[in-house]
Length: 259
Image 1: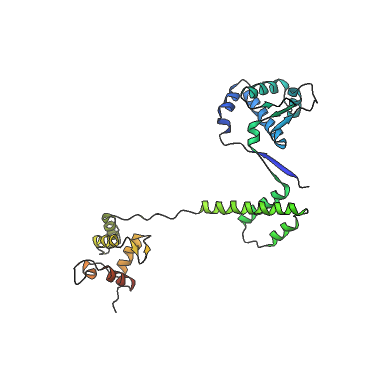
Image 2: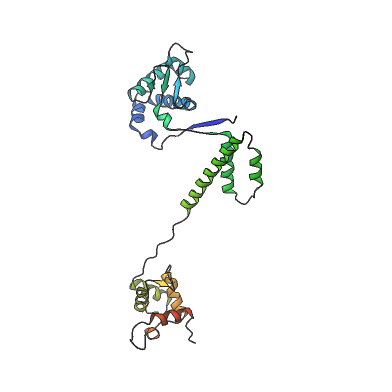
C-alpha cells in the first residue's frame, strides 16, 4: 500500500488573524502559539482530531507528553483555544481542531513521484520520453493505483498549462497617436511625412494596415518615409481633391512604384 503524506496549509495572514494575535500577546504567548501549531500537525492524520488514549491521567498531561511541552503551558493553550472556539470536545475523548481540518491536504507516495517528475519535466522539457517510461515502471499494482496516478498526472498538466497562460505577457494595447506625437517623431527622423495627412488617413480607415489593426504607428511612419510618401499631392483624388484611400493603400503596398 502506497505511503500517504499529509501537510497543513496555513493562510498567508495566519499570524495576523485576531485570535492568533491575541494568543501571542498573552505572557508566554509565542510558546502557546507553537503548541497550537504542533497540535494541528498532530491532528492532520486523523482529520483534525486528537484522541485521548488514557496514557496519562488527563488529556492535558497526555498531550504535553506527545508534544514534548510543559503541562502548564499546554493547559493554558487548551483553555484559550476552548474560549475562542478553536477546539471542540466530542464527549468521547476526541478533540476536534476546526481550523486544522480546513487546512489539511494529502497525497500518496506515488502521486508525489508524479508531481516531482512533472516539475522536473517543466524545467527540462527537451529530455525526451525516457524519463516518462521509467516513471511508468514505478506504477505498481493494483491497477487502481495506476489510474489514480494518471488522474493526478492530468491535474498537474492542467496546473502547468494554467501557469504558462498566466505567465504569458499580455499583448500591448495600441494607442492612437496625436498629431503632435506624429510631428515630433517625424522631426526626430528628419523626414517630410505630413503628420496631418497621416493621422487623417488612418482615422478614416480605422487605424488599419491593410485589413489588420495597426500595432505600431511609428512603423507606419517609417513605411511612408521609405516609400517616399511625404506630400499631400500624392494621395489626393483627381476628382474630389480629398484623400484617395484606395490609391494610398496601393501606393504603400507597391513601395511607391506605379505600374
